[in-house]
Structure formats: structure tokens, C-alpha cells
Length: 304
Image (cartoon, rainbow, N blue to C red; front, side):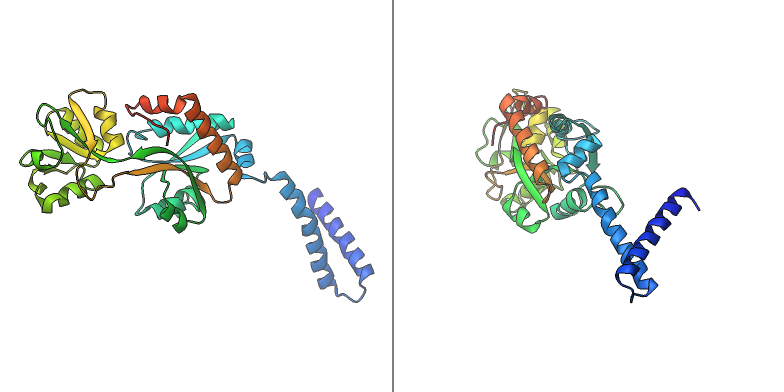
């Protein structure tokens, strides 16, 4: 018998003797059960006292902030670089810890992403993260996911079109693009809007075998098309500094006029972490660091 087992046995015998003296009618089996329950009851508070009580305390004890970021989402994240990689580092620094990225591929819908990355973890064993970036700050999404807290919008995304001013000087409607090559990622909102525009009038001239709006922007920059459609972040990151091109809202009635905003999400019960991250984001915005961070990718950040 080891010293630890001897101590445990002695403690159990002491509890059993005490219980037996107090309740002489109890069988030994019942006394053992009562003694074990008493020992566990005494042990649990000691363990709990050593465990950090809040999400923020656990992060600081660990020394790392685990941040969920989408894979292949330029200019926010691609191959370990991008706006949200730098944002993750800035947020971690504000909490006094190191950043630890958890890149992930988008699932079928946003509800799945929140489950996998924020409150439960993936069935393959990875996750959850402490915080997830690039989450739409949307009331319907919030109501559908009561186990998460979504807050601190930091970027407004819009569906836009960029054009070569020498070839298409004016664009109040899509009519000037008829018969001319236009690029848009096929599996994207911009692509679907263009494919359905004017009863499919542009289908034959669209270049849609693209995975991202940045690829459409590159085709425009190279002169292979006269216009490119995509999200504002995608097109601005490639073309925003080039005076040959102009980026304007996509003139399609079904395009969301005001776009949508993205922020971050944590577990609903991680209230202290959410408060700390809100404060961090406000400090980044107020100091101008957030604007500079977006400017490095060619985006004009504005306070929401």
C-alpha cells in the first residue's frame, strides 16, 4: 500500500468510526457511503478554490487568448496573415496575454460556426475558442443562438462593383455592362445577384469560376474584364488605391443597401471576457490603431 493510499484509508476509517458512533444502527456499507460522500463534499470546495472562476481569469492563467478566424477570407485572414490576425494580436495584448489563432473553414451556416467555434467545439475534437471574429451582428442571428453573446461591430460590409473608368466611365445601372466581360465569384452573394440581374441578361458574359471577390478584382486589375463584383473589403483591398478604378454600390434592387456589420462572439456566460474585449475594441478605435490596422490592407475604416 502506498503512503497516499494509507492516508486515504485512515481518513475513511476515521469517518466510518465517527459515523458509526453517531448512528449505531447503520450498516457498514451505508456508513462507508456516508463517509465517502462526506469526504467528497469536503474535497470539492478545495478543488474549486484552485480553479479560476471566470473566463477572463482562465485566459490569464493560461497566458493565451484563443481566437477563431475564418480560413481563406482575404483581406481578413489568408495563410496566417490579414486584418483579423493583427486584430487578434491587439486584443490579446490588451488582456496581457499572447494570441493563439484557431483557423477554421466555414460550415453550412452561421449557426454551425457558432456552435463549433464558440460554445461547444467541433465533433472532430477542435475548439471551442475563447472568442470568434467576423460574426454578423444581427438580431435574428442573436435570437437563434442564445448560448453566445455577439457584440462590438468593427466593420461594415457591402456588395459593390468596381469598374475600369476608361472603359465604363458611368454606371448608374447595369445597362452599360451589357455584352462586356464582368467577373464575380460564383458561390457568393455578388455572384448570385449578377446571375439573376435583369432576368439573367448577364449570364453569358459573367466570369464566375472564381472562389473569392479578390480574384474578380485581380482580373479587373489585369484588364481581363471591365468590371468586378464582390464585397467591399475584397475589392477595396485590391483596387482601392488605384485611380484607374472606381468602386460603387452594386446597382441591383435586391442588393442589401446598408450591407451588414461584423463583430465578435463569446460564450453567453463569459460576461467578464465580453466586457474586457468591448473595452479593448473601444481603446483600439479611440487611439486610431484600428483605423491604421485596416489601412494596411487598403480599407478605409470608419467608426460604426
